[in-house]
View: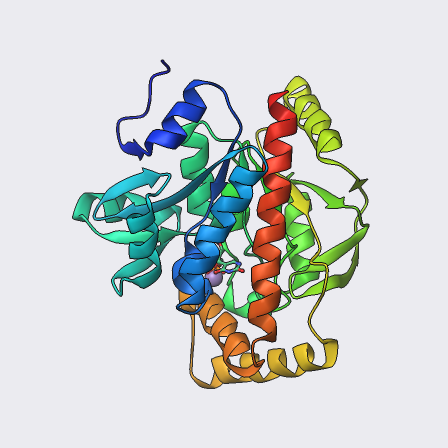
Length: 304
Ligand code: PSU
Ligand code: MN
């Protein structure tokens, strides 16, 4: 039996899998509470867990509920994250405050990755990473996801970064922060809703087994102090013209309404969902499912 961190509450399933050195995939909760509309959010959260199990790994959705950090959620806990109105959005800096005050919070990529590593989990699936926002040269709005991932040994599967961001600047920051980056079956850096952000990737991988080999080499070379990002493009992207139109109107609305800080990303996602007649939601759901399946395959290949 391995010693478990006492501030973390493990689900029985995740506890057993970690104890037996079986593959585990961390899943974030901000996507559930702040990234997807009800009632699809709960449905997707359940489906994603089923996809990970199907592929032979154990899902560990991570969240803070009533001051307790959960590594792996029961169905009623998933429901709480999806449906309760008092679920904050927590990045790393918010975690201790939520725990100390008994609050509930969904965890961002940064916070989920941090807690996953603390729990002994090294593969993580999300939708899109946070990054450098457009206009960051004035607003300084850069997601804490980037700095968090610069100091965590974790493999994160995502569909690139959202087109709502400054993709070029985000890629430059990933390079500076020594965060590894490979494209899954592509050399086009994906743009979340779009398969190609217009930026090219240096490295392409074609299988989970290849990624497992890279993970092992990172450990041997001690370049695993920072994360490895696997950029997995969505199969069927959004209509480009519609995407560009919605993005422009969303950015204009955010500016006009003075949306700042951690409200920016949920605001823009909600704008997409509200104006694309279901298309952005369909793409968002496809992304999370496909990333979870690939993350499970990577966890399984790495456990071999
Ligand atoms: N990708 C999605 N939906 C989301 C997010 C990403 O498809 O809800 C969330 C993630 O939790 C990510 C966060 O960590 O948005 C980034 O927020 P910010 O830009 O405030 O750092
Ligand atoms: Mn921000």
